Amino acid sequence: MELVKQRKLPACEAIQYNGQSCYQMSNLWDALHNTNNSASCREVDLSVLDLLPTLQEREWPPFSSLKLTDTLSSCSSRSSPGPDHIKWVHLKAVLENEKST
Image 1 (tube, helix red, strand yellow):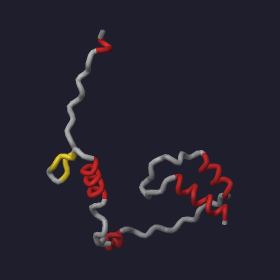
Image 2 (tube, helix red, strand yellow):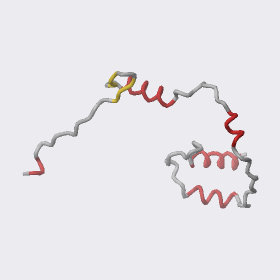
Image 3 (cartoon, one colour):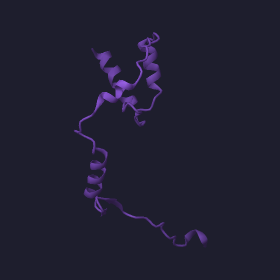
Image 4 (spheres, one colour):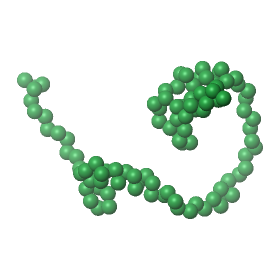
């Protein structure tokens, strides 16, 4: 029967980091960590921001904390962060902290 035949696994290659294959979890972790944090502790030239035009600051439209709570309750706490690296779970925690104080 076609359903029970052994299938060929797709060809795959090990992740390469610094010219070496990563076969162990510790090597994979080092590759991930060092790749994603390669810019940590580097100096940043903020003068490039001087070329950007200054936009007029806009006011927030008024909204109640009840509206914010209702809106956040429909958002998944397991979603991935946006460009600002903030997740819904972070905003929910801030709102919970505000309620308790």
